[in-house]
Amino acid sequence: MDFEQRLQILEDDRAIRDLKARYLRAADGKDVEGIRDCFIVDAVIDFEGFPSFDARDPFIAIYTRMACVAGIFDIHHGANGIIKFDGDNNASGQWSLLFHNINLEARTLTQMGVEYEDSYVKGSDGSWRIAQTRSRRTSALVHSVADDGRPIVAVMGAMTANFGT
Image 1 (tube, rainbow, N blue to C red):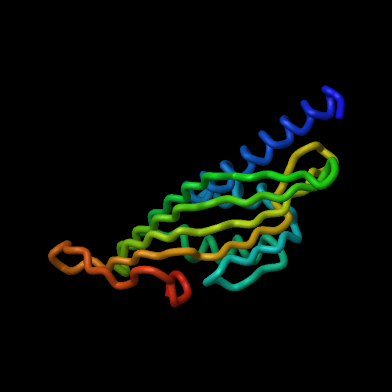
Image 2: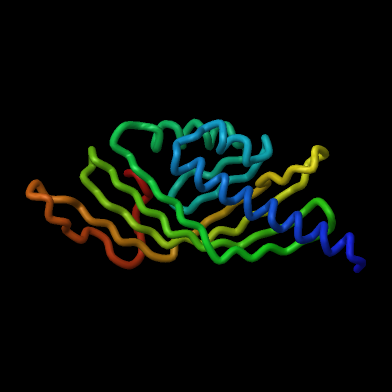
C-alpha cells in the first residue's frame, strides 16, 4: 500500500467517525434533516426494541413521533469505534453507546448500554453514509420518578420491554 492509499484510508476513517458523531448529535438535537442526511435512502435500520426498517424515511417518521416532542430529552454518547474497510467504497463499524433518556410525561429516567454494528457506503460525491445499522441492548437502568422526586428503580440489568412503551 502506497502513501496515497494509506492517506485515503485515514481520511475515510475520519469521515466515517464524523458521520457517526453527526448522527448522534443530530439525534440529541432532534435535527430530523441532519439524521436523514446520515443514511442512504434504502438504509436498513434494526434497533433492538423498535420496529425494523428497510428505508430511512419510515425510521425518521417514528423517530419524529417518539423523540421530537416536548418533555423528551436524549443523550447518545458513542465511543470505542472500530472501523474496517472492504474496498474503497464500503466499510463497517462497531460502536458502544451510552444512551440516556428523560421522559417528563412518563416520569422516567432511562440509561441503556447499546452495541451498534454499522455498514457504510461512499457515494459518488465522496461522502460516506450509513447503509445499515443494527443495535442490541447490553444493559438497562430505568427509574420511575415518584411524586416527591425520588427515583425508584424499575428495571436493572436487561431491558425486557420495547423502549418508549
